[in-house]
Length: 626
Image (cartoon, rainbow, N blue to C red; front, side):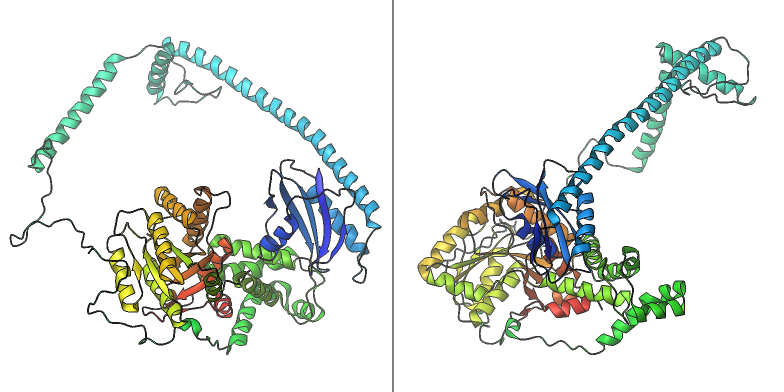
């Protein structure tokens, strides 16, 4: 049963809803569809599933009228699988667009029209249901008849051929293997003996007899071959294969045996040892987070003109000079999908060369096609430039954060509640979590925020020492418990220590783990569940392409599946590292934001503590479409 059908403008004004249905929807599926799908350029999808709080779950389908700026949405329960929804939406779009007036706000007269359209769509589906089973049964009967005839013929032929083979009949037509399913195989005169021999052997095998002498001959041949090869191997190799050769450690200059490789010193949790390590808090200057990046827009128009020229060359050859010129002056009536495909294909290839995941590039192109289909092309404009402008708007909308995450503001809010602000850094191995944690600590120190580090990477050798070095250089406290400890407990004790010492922010370093490593992902889920951090930052490399989608989606999936909480915490933000090494291959930022819906909060772009900056959305979009 259809739960709801409504029509609204792209500006959000509801023009008409079905009063007959009038079912109170549980939760807010329409708002979620607009927020999670339409605004994030996922409108190319066929449907959207919404899990309402409680037992209800809905499926939402929609269709656009891009020229009028209308959206038609149907909502029904997911378990029903209504077949007439697509056709009903198309008919509603056709009839409503005929009576639509931008000045009107109410359309009460459309109720009767919708009632008739709904009955017509349901009647068509019923007719299809009656027709389809008859067609399927007829096909099945035909297949069974054909198959049964073939099998009977094959069995008869097999029996007759076995008899002919036993009788040593000298005819030219013989079966090679006795399993022909009624098809004769003609054997030449020269191969007559082979046909007879094969027929005899297959006849024997079909009767259940087993030729032991031939098997023994084959075994003896195999034994001889293996013995010959073993002799050759034994000649070439002097070592006895029975004796296991163990590799011994090489000893240099009779040095004493190494003890256990654990050089962790028993250190108190303050990190204020007097060692000859340089203090850099005041030396490195202002962090790049607080500097505005200036983008030069020179030669941007020239590049666009070149791309437009490239994209429009095939069309000019096909249509001719006069027709293409007339179309650009007069404008096209309505854009169709076939008109958009060449420009979208070129745009998809360009995005993939910039390291955008193929799946993401394809979805983006589908969404842009859905937003442009049916629109009227303005005069003196080309399809390629229209598609590029629509893609630029879509990319800016995706990369712009849905909600503002201002860490400094949230730190002051947590300070008023007399609790530390906790940030957990997670990610795969070797992406630079500890280094960029120190960069974030340096940036917070520039804003007069007291910071404490928590060494919760109790798995990797040297992780505690690395973080301790950063803490000494920055002159901030560090909480550590050494190795082989439960990181969730270490983080909890660090937060308690920060509350006692008055530290405003706790930066929790965790061990690197692959997204498929379930034991380590379970430990991370436990750490997040037990400590409930204010911010979970995923640290990822800007070098990855398609793997960015796999990493983020599986991290979120594992955190959701392995959490003990009914409302699990997922990734809140992204920190992109090694951004200075990728030149114009900035597609990983787009892939990560699109797949997770989380914003890029920090970008690591160098080796020093100041090399941390914000993501410039305009610069990324310009680079992607360049």
